[in-house]
Amino acid sequence: MIEVIKSGLFSSIQDLGRSGYRKYGVPVSGAMDQFSSRLANQLVGNDEDAAVLEVTMLGPTLRFTVDCNVAICGARFSLSLDNTSVPMDQCIYIQAGQTLHFGSCPIGVRAYLAVQGGLSIEPVLGSRSQYSGITEDERLQKGDQIFMHNSPYSVLQGEFITEFDFSSKMIEVETGPEWGQLSDLSRQCILSNVLQVLPTSNRMAYRLVLCEEEVSLPDIITSPILPGTVQLTPSGDIIVMMRDAPVTGGYSRILQLTENGINGLAQKRAGEDIQFNLLA
Amino acid sequence: MKPTIQLYGQGILLSWKNKISEEIHERVLLYEKELTERLGNKIIESVVAYSSLLLFLKEGVDRHELMGEISEFIPADSNAIHESYCYKIPVCYGGDFGPDLTGLARLKAVKEETLIRMHANERYRIYMTGFLPGFLYLGGLHPELYTPRKSSPTISVAKGSVAIGGEQTGIYPQESPGGWHVIGRTPIDLFSAKKPSPSIFSPGDYLKFEVITRDEFNVIREEVSTGRYNIEKERIA
Image 1 (tube, each protein chain N blue to C red):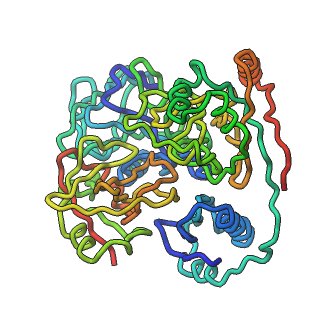
Image 2 (cartoon, helix red, strand yellow):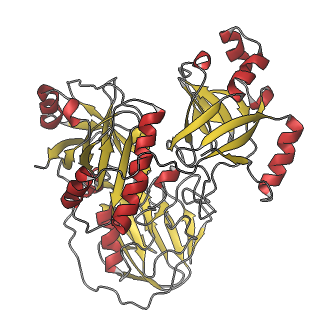
Image 3 (cartoon, one colour):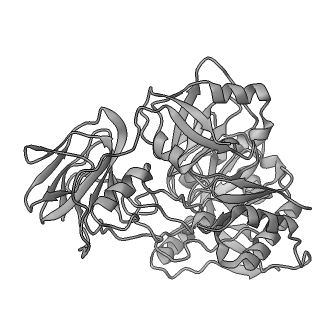
């Protein structure tokens, strides 16, 4: 099992989310950057939906009590096993008694620790993704013990170069249900300008500010919304719903991030610039 | 009343007139029922809202083909009556369960008992669940009780709190920050993640609030926590 010596800024167990319960108002949740979480699982021979540990900005310190294979993908963290530096994007063998320490990450926001066999907390409503009010805990605390499943499958050996481009500003989008309510000028403004990520961004929503311009749209009556939906409020706030988004909302839905878009935005930090890339 | 149909994310969104009305909502429910039956396992799940319906498609299903099929679709039985229930929700009003009751009564220039009667005498329609797991959007609040939300939300509204905000009333299914005016509390659980069916309420069902005393609150709370409490319901359609 894994003992949490330090929990890090915000670490939680996630898989690809819980679907089938939206009608009860249950958000889908799941890993913020699913490109990286799937990759980490692939490297240790897991199903892509196996539960992983999502770490944010300042990572945890974890002590392993059994031998196992792990892989870490996503934001560029400095990693060390006991006092030796270890690489990301590769299968690493950990011996019982060793401690994995995540430092900070200068690039990106979230990384994923996959353990061969997958993490084995009790699933709730079909998923192991932690979410306040659904699972017992919403995040890791110091002193927690995380167990893992046994796995008969083999790992992918060798080095792997991630294709994830952390430096790209472009976030892939499609039009949203209320895109048609915007004037041509407003649409052009939203697509051709740069937006900045605000510090109040989190797993539920990213807040963006359009530099030097202002557009707005009136409220809509409460309607279904999705992770990736870009909402525009009457006061000109731009809010991008992310994985823990509620299932309904009352603001105009102007754009919809693709899966690539959500994964990309999940790695953007407060103060970083992005630009929407509207797919034809 | 035909909806507009468009792709939205990985799903298909059907939208009717942007208005809250029982008639429109019945239409949404009819489409939801019949399309779910007709399209079978091409649909993973659906979300009903005031005047729209979002269908989530199974991976690999041809969305454009399905959009075409849905555009041609006419509900077979527009006079069909679906099974619906009215649930009795016990509520203890006022005191520390309803910290905003006194202020609200003063604002409306009515006695607290009058306000309680106005709130508890209505039959509220459930339009959808959203905002939080188990949070029901209810319609039918007496217009005299409409009150704008607080300009600054309360940091912590207790689980089970019954509140009024804008033109709506609702129940907080879990502790959360909130900007609505809290007038009472229910001892029942609206949502439980531990159950395979986490909530018993469906859009198109109704709720009625029943006034209970503090002692009754405690008794029911005890029954709820030991799984012995059954919510009273009557079939209305």
